[in-house]
Length: 157
Image (cartoon, rainbow, N blue to C red; front, side, top):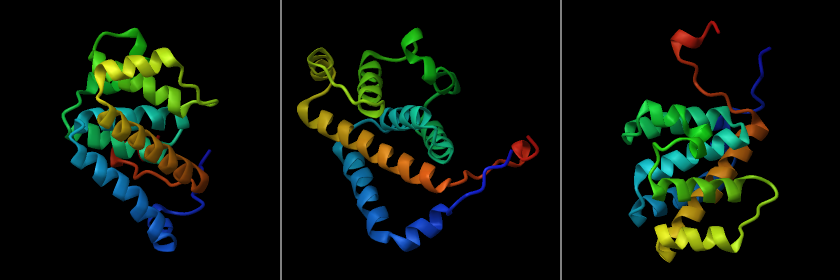
């Protein structure tokens, strides 16, 4: 079954340049904050998995690879709690991502306290902003069925 796009990402950008620019401004602020690029890409991939966003999933998997995230760590991301390949800081960020992405959103005091053992208050603000922005992008891309570019070798699948 083929899923037809309702709108391509480029068309969305043309129709709502201010929205695109606002979300990109968050991305630039996070990049300038000092949070590790590999970490922010891991959480974008995880949120995109949860939200079922094929476009963002492919986009951020490619960026994660460019940031040095190994294929093994990408392969195991959906089951991150069951493996030891992630650092305590990454595990905390992934738990925070899931808490802010899954519905209903529920951040208990224990999780918040755990976050502050791995991240400064400032880092946590930028981490939270990253999660909020990828969730916004996921919802936009899913609503309009943005289609990821399909690599040549997978075109016949």
